[in-house]
Length: 111
Length: 117
Image (cartoon, rainbow over all chains, first blue to last red; front, side):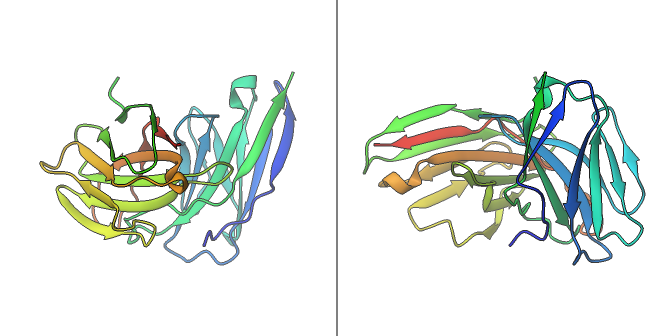
């Protein structure tokens, strides 16, 4: 069972920031938060991961609340190519066997 | 391109036929995973290799499914006596395992889309 809860769908205007929330209220102390996205008919693409500090890379920023029960993925300037299903996954290093994907959030970026 | 590659990208077969898919991981990655994804769902784990050893199998992997990674590099997934319910996208991912206490990132291939008629 997925350990995360995400909205089913979201819209965002092109050029604006897309903020995708994820609840993981049962997260354990050694579990990391990972984000992947999947553009139609392609394999999932890794975006970012973090433990408790906020993280930023060339694709996105990850904001994790202090209690670690929720996080937000931020795409600072969404483009039409960011339209995809975004998956939030929590996973401990010891579970080096699979990623537990839920249904994700379908983000639609509109012109 | 140094990412994960999968072949073929698409496969159409008739029920009862056998099919085989190939995955070539990122070259230095010691771990390889197979997932299955049906329409509207997230990927579901099937099996996992560390080097050539198959260490984990999901209950989704019926006895008609077999996976190998003979030399710890590429892997094959074979489905025998295919059924219409096997129609799905089959995804391969690889990662560099650094130890049980360190996070690893899995990188996915483009997938093989199977349609069983």
